[in-house]
Image (tube, rainbow, N blue to C red; front, side, top):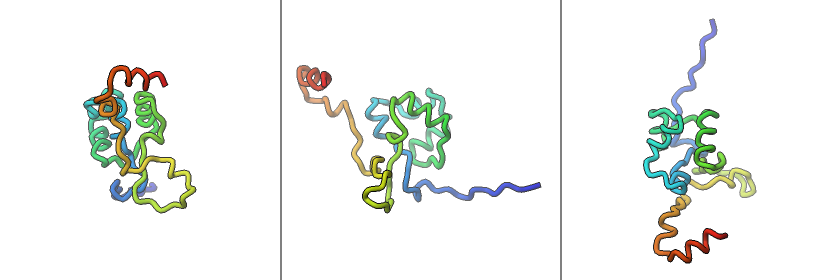
Length: 122
């Protein structure tokens, strides 16, 4: 009988491509991310790992659930961290882990109703 080789210890803090849900959850005004992830079918344990930045893998069912429920693409879910690739590399299309998250509530705060209506027309 052949034995399976264990994958060893995976450490997400060493990965250059990481799951980065904070920006999309903030943009979608998700106020309780853990509850939201569980509601869309992600287990409690995995949801907490995703939110803490400890997730080391993501299966296609989870990826599909995230993208369909958050109305986004996989590129919106991942970010780059400490990676050295040429300037013209396609990976640069991903967000950087250091990018500030878009907060639509803060963006509209202080704007008049007329200004908001004009923005929403575009």
